Image (cartoon, rainbow, N blue to C red; front, side):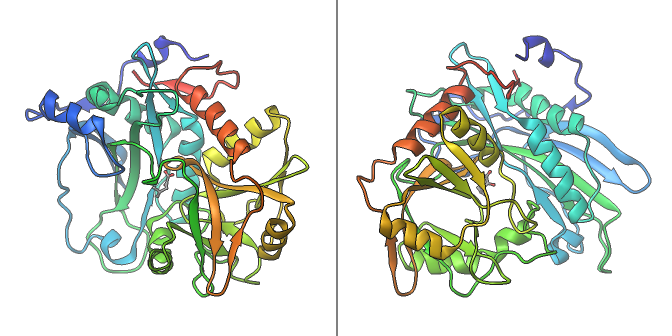
Length: 373
Ligand code: COI
């Protein structure tokens, strides 16, 4: 179990406090109903990298627009990566985050794929602590055990060198911004409809699918437009090689619950992002007496399992979405719905276990929590 002393180490981030922080009353009003990704805190963390000086200039400074040269290579060639991780307020007021070392490690993996410099795990985790030391008042207090409000932290790294030649940038900036968040989907934990794109692919073997880079999300938006036009809130992507294997939703991983107690998620390949929530669900599902399986699952298995009642639940999971049941899969010519009562008992049970852990309401037996403030 981490202790408060974890947070008392001298930070190597210099702090330049904002002289115009949001008024308490306005901030508290925002925290009542933050939505997702719409409001930002008073500060941001920043670290600069150059080929010659490595990482330097660790700072927490007032949140505000960036000054970027119009030739900055991120604007032209998309050399960029990001992360998503949350800060949770516990009942005693302390603030914690969940498995940050997994995000730090994935951030390094993404950096390698995008030919960006790797940030150390210490800098990654210290940047979250340094930002929260200033902006802790922005972490909402949950109103009930079902409330999933948090402060969503968005670390990102961009190629800022002004240069139009195509090669890895020699100047890079790392930032962390923070945004108070309620449920990602408007309906909270109500089942969502998912669109199956018959044409668009998100990732191909040898590409960047396993990395958390902006380009993957940009590539998913045309399909996301199709989804919205069909009243669906997300897109399920199939593999690019055979157009057969279920991969992920672009911003979330998928799980399938079987009536015999198996719980299946597509096995990791270089076209699937390894979600921290996905990894945690595999462990929590086993604790709940289910049998987790990581293996390829085809769209035919989804269709047939839904029709026969073998598959009893499908859910999406991710840091932003937590665990959200999938009500139906919609394609150009069919709607794949599950049989049964639609109660999504397993999804709800695992979601409660996960939230209880993250909000400090149950024992952190795997040591997944790190104290920020
Ligand atoms: C997350 O769950 O943190 C994501 O990155 C999904 C999305 C908001 C981009």
